[in-house]
Image (cartoon, rainbow over all chains, first blue to last red; front, side, top):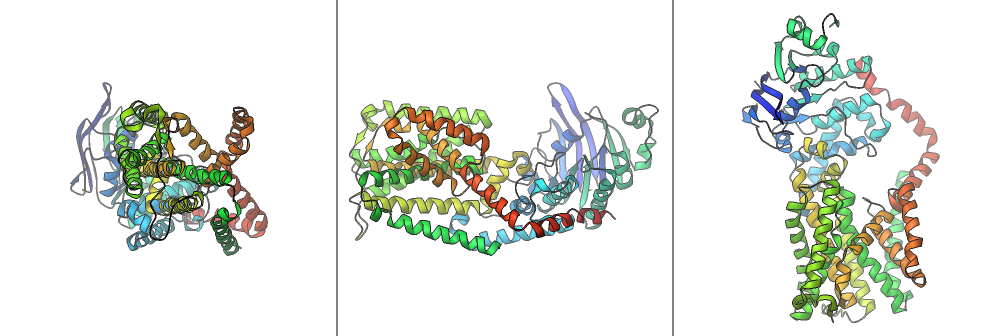
Length: 256
Length: 340
């Protein structure tokens, strides 16, 4: 198991936003977390990536205990994440947004900057190269010198994934990677996620679009009111009574 | 085309540098030279604020306090203890930087407007301490007779001309520091925080520590400016440390352009000179300056540097229209190719 949570939970003022969730992601697979609005999916992501401190439980990545580590340290340990809204700096070029992504793997400090040390030069070059590689991987290298504000929503999603890649992660947590893009573009993003797995990355995503998740995920976990109500292969989950009731609503079906 | 404009910038830089070297030759009048020297001093202080506000996005309203720590470190050491100037100046920068670092531990736990108000309070406390601690700082009467720096080898600092070169040297050093930070991974981390603290943390940047560093650099530069101010003016009164000075520095930065390399120099220089030329209007100067600033902030939020950058892109876009539009059409495609 690459990623493992045990009893992971958080309480906000008496409300159990995430209630003692056990979850595992195997190396080189795609795991998806689904659930209705307010089910605690994003909170669960925030718990794993150190943006919230859990009230209960543990998070382990590749054997290393990440529980209670601040966000920037979980990145160092190999956990990269994206956000629902891309948060990129619109007025800067795509490449300039990306270079800082490799910062976590570099060491140069204020004095390196002032004295323009060889270490700084080498790390700048490395960061730039890593950024270009990540952009190439995500299929957006041709947009490197465009400002983020001038590229399409889908391209911005790809750039965010590239930014996560530039941190040299073991696992990518993607928070609704296909929110706000059309069906054709969603298919393109799904292809990118498959490509990630082919290249030995592990992906865990939160997604609303059932059609995307069904065709993509090796395993799905369903959260409802902060609790895990089902887990398994897409087919199993889709036919699970509790899931249909909670997530799809009675009588409403979606073709997978 | 791009290479040409790059060269053009370098040439302009050299021209500005050469002009700045010959300023004391052309400006024989000590009064006018003094205005320019003070413009440089405030420019240095503004560069300090720019690192925190312009690069890292944190609005500190305690900047004058740290300027004051630097000024009074030099003042107290040289006047009260007859300490030599140079080590005093070094201590001034270090003291304000260390104090900034320590205060940052607490101040940076707050965010946005809370951080601004917290630092405003810090600045005011520093002012009060300086004003009330008569035994050390001379209180409201101030310190009189801060000496010029001791000579270094054959160079003597005995009048406005030599002080002009001294402060020009420190201005260039400050600009170099600002440039090297902006063009490094350290500066990129700062700017990532300005853009989005959340995303910065998610890319592995230690947001707290980076802000702390930016704050210490910023206050250190403010202290350096204060020390230079002390030696040039020769007299220190607590008024210079008070809150209005912070807002003046902020004004220079807003006019010049936050986050840009030329902004602090342009803003500080232009506004201080303008202020001097409008001297005959006395308090009415603010009536004139106020609306100018309001207009500037509404229409050019990135200041004069931003205005210049916008003009430049527009000119570039007009000249390279043919190739640009072709390029733009092509670059929407790759994402879709991937999908098929």
